[in-house]
Length: 114
Length: 113
Image (cartoon, rainbow over all chains, first blue to last red; front, side, top):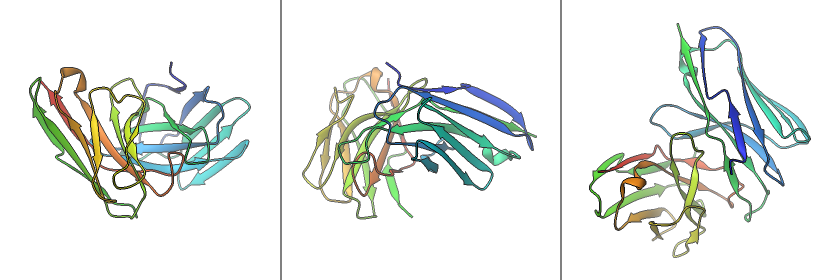
């Protein structure tokens, strides 16, 4: 059973536009949530991690929110660039310890066109 | 910054073939992981290790063996490869356990004909 659902599956935006990616999950407990960027043919690179019950983070043009009550997170990308073309993966960690597990979403494929 | 390398980057084999995927990390991390990534699925954990000589079973271990020879090196073995094992394989490492930030290698694309 998929415990981390991402939407949309794919998204096309024009360079300079903003976009929002969604992540809904049913993982319990939910210690933290991390967003990764995966360029085509490459590994995952961490963008941000959210920990608090209602959390917000910002990393340049990337900003993210987490609402643990709703089990929902968003990743906002402002003023998109061609280099933002990638798959964005939401990952929920169920515990903050060595016994915890990571639960991966299938990703949202973002394509930025000129 | 964490450095995790994988080899080969691409591999093609036939059904029943014997394949070894290699991973090396140079960060003195205790934990290392092997994942597979398939279209429509999130990454799935195959095996992991918390030190040389240690091996822990992940969520999708069937058909895979793994060996951690040193703190740096972690190998994934497919002794009788099947087409269902065609996938993109990622190695990762972390300082602590599974919930800690993991640093990923570039991936190995394996095709089993």
